[in-house]
Length: 92
Image (cartoon, rainbow, N blue to C red; front, top):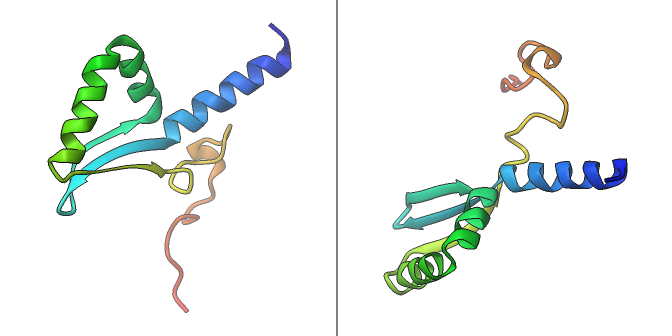
């Protein structure tokens, strides 16, 4: 496998981990899972996931995909790379 293929796979895995499938009703979250987990479950049990999705929508639940990229540190960054107070709100 070439280096560009590996980097593309890593990028897709990262995107799947920061995007979450959220199922909620009346503002209360019932399910909040990374897209990678949902895809793996769908591959292993496509009928079960399909039926659960249909039941959720019929029951009035909202199903959406959220991007948690803003909450996650940049790729390759660690807690040590972030300066102290970087995420704290500033006073004006």
